[in-house]
Image (tube, rainbow, N blue to C red; front, side, top):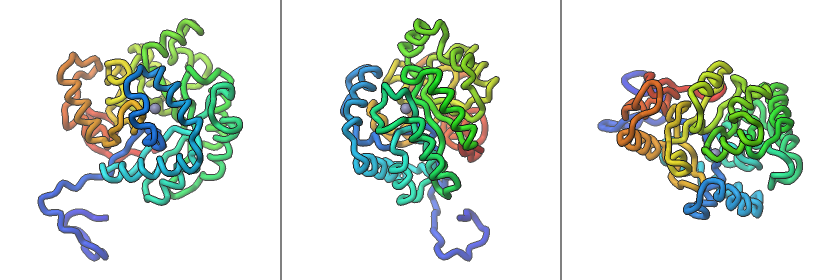
Length: 313
Ligand SMILES: [Zn+2]
């Protein structure tokens, strides 16, 4: 595609006079099949929502995941998203929806302890098979996910990392999403989640951690030292705990999780700036202006000019 007065010898030329022509947006954290869970647990705290969602998605069939993924992909296209990072099981069904719709999917098969999963079979083996099968695909970039410190033991984290290193792919996980997650982990291990992940040797430049809301400035430094990326989810933060920004966030949109049902990055972008306007910004570089919030959907940094950047770049 070309924009402007360049080569116009294309099969199709669109007159976009008076329109804004934007690059495709990137959603760094999604559970696209969860379009099917909309409204199912809107009125309960995150922990309750997770167990309610688990009991519902335990009944999902492959066909359900396929249909939910297709719906989510179509909605993303309608709101200008062309690439997304997904964390789920049965990612091969999500992959099918990605190819059918022509999006680019960075798909992480989620791992967690076998005793806690609703997946059929061993999650690490499932992830291994998924990555091996889809590596090198034009539209699907497979990777390895971990649900979070509340659902995965040290052994599971290290197996997931070994898998990612062996296949040379990225990793994706939830991190410090709620105060409860942090406090429970500290009680169990004596360490905050980021401290614990560093101790067990999981932090790595391959990792994109979603949320990162309940992090201390020292944890942010730790994440930066290990080259970890953070996908900020401005809508899910206040829904879960009343704080959308945290210290580690940039400003990309979360997907249509059951707790909020707007898949549009523009909605998340507007929400972020409006929420920020009414509060004292916590981030070391202060409040994010509207233009900065928009830029962050393209470049990942609300304080830097737009630049398309894909996970793994
Ligand atoms: Zn999530």
